[in-house]
Image (tube, rainbow, N blue to C red; front, side, top):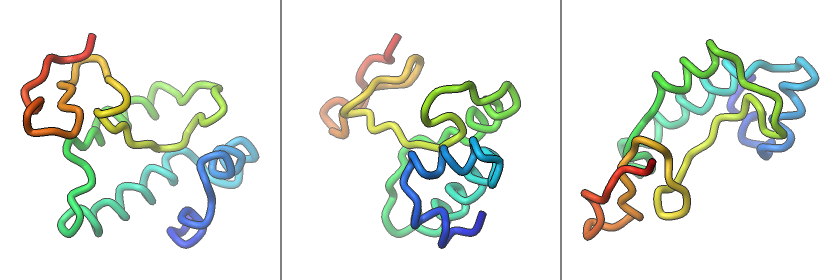
Length: 100
C-alpha cells in the first residue's frame, strides 16, 4: 500500500483492506514506520517506538478483532501498557510507575 492510500483511509477502512486481502498488516506497518521516520525529527510524536514488538506481534499473528492488523499509537496519558512507564505526557510524571 502506498502512503497516499494509507493516509486517506481511517483505521476501520484499513482493517477492511486487510480483511479483504487487498493489503497486509506488514504493509501497513511499513507505511506507518516510513511516515514516522519522516516526521519524528520535526514533530517528535513518538517517545517510545516499539517496532520490534510490532514485528514480533505480526510474526505471532494479528488476531481477529475489529482493527486486527492496523498499527496504532498509545498515548500514555490515556491508556497504560503493561511493562511501560506511565508518564501521562508530563515531565512531573516522567518516572511514573510501570503499568501492570
